[in-house]
Amino acid sequence: MNSSDPITQTIETISSLRDNQLCIDCGKEPTAYLIIDYSGFICENCYKIHKSLNFCQAIKPLSSPLSELETQIADIGGNTALYEYWDFYTLNYKPISYKYSTNASQYYKVILTQLLNSQETDSFLLNYETGREQSEAVLNSLTYLIEEVSLEVTEKKNAEKLKPKKTFISKIDEKIQQMGDSLISSQVYKTFEKEMESLSKELNKLF
Image (cartoon, rainbow, N blue to C red; front, side):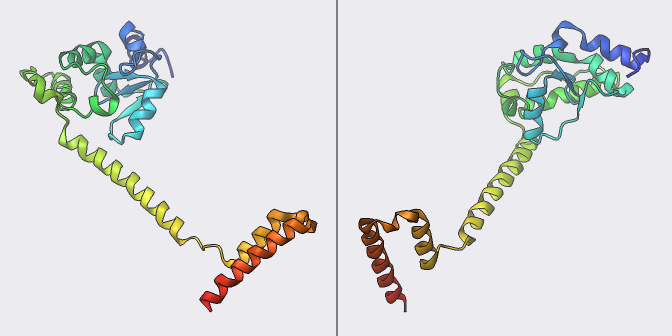
């Protein structure tokens, strides 16, 4: 990145602010990504969680060039504003899967868009209960993810059922391999003979 570029200089200044240096989600790790939709800075670990949840959010690494629009979003928001907003709904220390799926979080994106378009944000905050309810739109994406995982589990179970079962002959071969050289022991050999008799009876029942 060219640090002399005005956009690069702006994002470097924004990301160097104290609250933007630590992840908005875990509050512990240094930030490495910007969630464009929320103008929030997150760390590498929390980024992986976001991607696994299939929230379809626009997330960009701070190491890559940001557009002028993305830089403007980062400038009007940031971790301080997002933290204060979530604080009203006591969402700051909630799991990522819950926090970002609430109506409050979805509504925050509307507020950011209004500010970005230089509109007067006459939007009133959602009441506490409504804000903490999970958004149907995001729940649908989570439901899809759950169904996808469930389907994968089902396919694995079906694949296990289709595996060929051990035949009597393979059981005999396996028994011989298990016993190996110990067949020379008369006691072990007698045990082997009993196993063979048992298997023979099972074969006779089938034929």
